[in-house]
Figure (cartoon, rainbow, N blue to C red):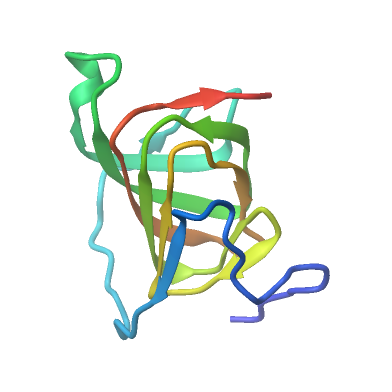
Length: 137
């Protein structure tokens, strides 16, 4: 895979005192065939989701978890995390606020974090939020 990284920072940056980035060595991950659905069409571009659980259906402030697939060139606009978010990069390259993350990077964002996400060549993530986000754009 040829990853173009011009203009992308490769050193993880912390966005608040409570944010953490842990670089795990997880080896190759095989993602099974899953029934991914378009995720927030009109807001997110080329992003697909396979929900693992979704408590927001019963409680608007409920937690959720999913496997999220970003196709090449995918983009998610800036939003605010009211609660914690945990993202594990399973495959591909993931860019958040111009910081490049690779497979095995575990990113934990504290309440108050804002970010936008994208990928150049595509990626798959395992993501969990304890409270839904507030869209800023």
